Length: 131
View 1 (cartoon, rainbow, N blue to C red):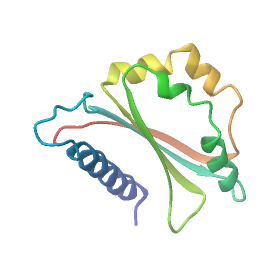
View 2 (view 1 turned 90 degrees about the vertical axis):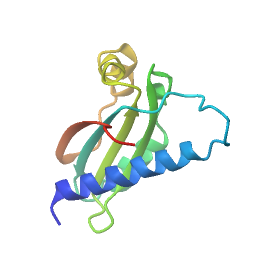
View 3 (view 1 turned 180 degrees about the vertical axis):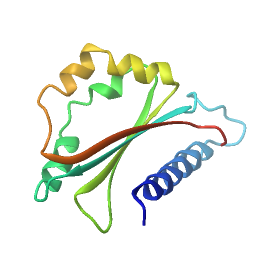
């Protein structure tokens, strides 16, 4: 299966999960947060033997992004057949919030240690157009 098809399918699953979670709000109760309108999908293929290290880095992360204005959530997904491929998906209130994060001092701090050896990386961004 093509890599981009997996990205799209994974994105659809995540969007459905977010929609389901927001649908859990009791009837008549207003949602407390603005739903995400902007999504980033960072495709990463790490060198063989570094998958667990990649996972652990996210498990132990400083969580600086969690405090970023407009940040709605983050998922790290591992490919089911090729364990060294990952998708890091973030949800944002809007595109400006994402760009503000990327240009912030907190972003620089969060990425100061570097990462694990990688074979390929790609960032794609999406707008949620139908819910």
